[in-house]
Length: 455
Image 1 (cartoon, rainbow, N blue to C red):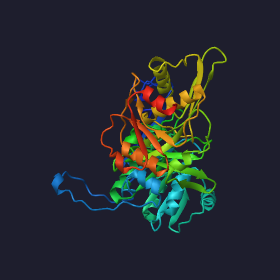
Image 2 (cartoon, rainbow, N blue to C red):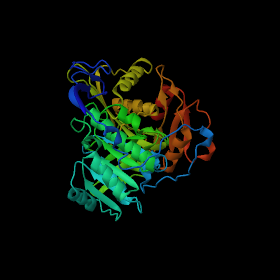
Image 3 (cartoon, rainbow, N blue to C red):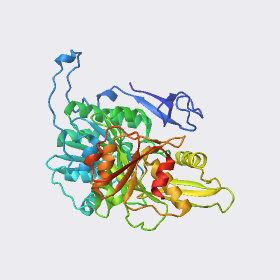
Image 4 (cartoon, helix red, strand yellow):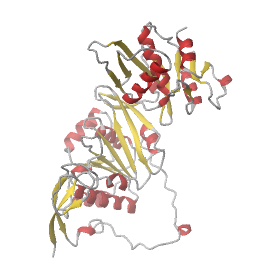
């Protein structure tokens, strides 16, 4: 006979408690405990076995493990394949997260319609097949082997997998699924853990690649228990400002590739367009005789590109100076302002400083420090920088210009886009300067860079 009991489960980490508490002892979050009914039945662990016949497992020596060479599945999306490490691995589970309206469903549907001869089962718990068809017509992509179904029941989805036998499964979204063996609402910790575990077992036993779309909470983290990110093989974060047209796909976790890669997309009326050369889009080339603009050779992931750094320095109108940064760490901006004040002698304590990374992207590469301080100084003294010069260098607390990684890729990108000069740290190791068709100037301190820029 089935047993039913009531427990309180933390919606942030999944910790359960026999009674309600205000603060979770495991993760420290407040007001996250929700009452759930746990229904223990003999069929709870047999969801997958009802549809797939599996043999009993037994330990074997690692040298005797049979290895089959399964080629990666090409998604026909260069940027997505780059982030995945060369394509989807059969039997892998990929989790795509992002803010509402950022384009997660468009990205996944576009991939499902372009994947070619692979049979795709697109399961949507949020949209009807008619709504999915309208989006497919808008992005002008078609795939005769793409099947769509609107379903939220885990047991019925397992039946569709058994009957259709797809080559790729898409779930939009994992928070909408529910299992009859769990007496709780869809999106709860228990439902997400149970549904993900059942789909994961099917994926591993049948070499079926699965793409899950996940919601995020108000803190920006993936909704549901933290174990969700541990269960899947790949976690991708789709981010960007909805007021701009650029989107960045980052790899947070990847068991089959590097987490340093990023993919850049442009949101258009007919879907997402892959951006093969982001440098040409992130540079405006319309800043002649304008102060406060500097070009930096940055690297995001393994890809070099040039970005435009814009700064505005003005007298504080209300006594207390303001510090604002868009696309750049505000704490690092305050540190760079302190370095300019202490080491370079520029009085910026009573002035407002506003910094913006053009294009609406967020950059974490410390090599743009030199461009940031140069743009700030250019705006402060109202002298524009030369349009055909770019720079790359990290600024230390003592005012020195520290070396940065992969300098040859930065120099090559600047030379390819027609820049005439690039400023790099003096003690950089490895670059063969003679092979580049660009003037390379090495500096060791801020004073040397400023004399070169504003001479």
